[in-house]
Image (cartoon, rainbow, N blue to C red):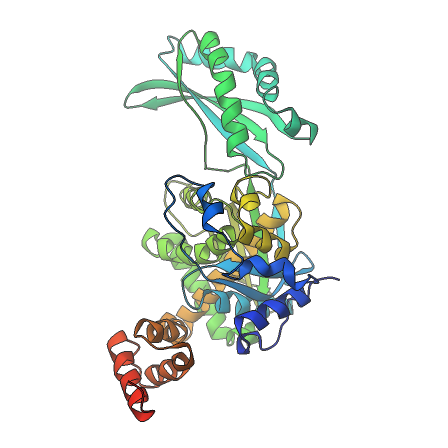
Length: 426
């Protein structure tokens, strides 16, 4: 059964009821998402095999973003984040794009780059040519390290060589291009880089130093595009103001840093929920934002001929479905099942679409009522809990502090004391 991402009134249910509704809408057995519950998630014993010196676990809320149509297919999106308003904002932005076909994406491929650093080359430019002449030999040696990847249609397929001027002298840098298929690829490309480094040193008549992938995944770009309905956004003035805000972020690195943080609110939440490497993805995205010599916005917003808002986003996304925490972490496995993705390309497309949706939601809030109104209303529940409110008290305390326009812990404590005094509770 295809997924239906429109679930009316999801927020009005308990977490257990929501999980059942989400599983039903995704065509899954309820047990398939069992690991999303705290009682069936990552155990301390499992964690002990994932990293060193384990002493405990940290819980991060996992929400589900609704309303997404991506490349013609509905998706329910798991998002792991501690920040209020992120899931709701992404869902609302997806609703505004839904009537215009949702999100469409394109993908440049599953290519990662390993770098091998050559030091002390007597003739750097001659060394560059000698390494390029040895291309086929180096590729064959690299591919001997991972016959399984080659059998799946991947593997090393090209090299490039740069002569780099540094404060430590002239260096020669070889890039090994590897199609990593549905893996994130770090282990595969690092193994290949280490294997070919001795032969590179022989050819160069010098020595190699670093042999590691780059997280500047410029050959693994994902692009997302969507049309957001002008009327649902709030009308022509809001559309024009979002375009103006976008232009500000394109031109000014101070604004771009916060603009892109909004994008990463969506991207990182999905990357984390699927057990992928958040730091690698964030490093890649931010390096891409500075690719032209100045840090700038990763997205663009324009107006189309009908007055609707067109959003576009291009980001490098080194994510995969093979190996790492994606396979070892039960909650990540449940997130992948919920998404229904089968390839790294599909996963990257989902992540880019969520990043664009999150960005649109933040820009709309800024251009319309200001970022704090919606964010702080949702944040009020967290404030109420921080003030000591129990589960059955949080909603009432949150509503009061929002109505009073004092969304602060100290005021929440005052409201909670009044509430409990009225009920005869200590």
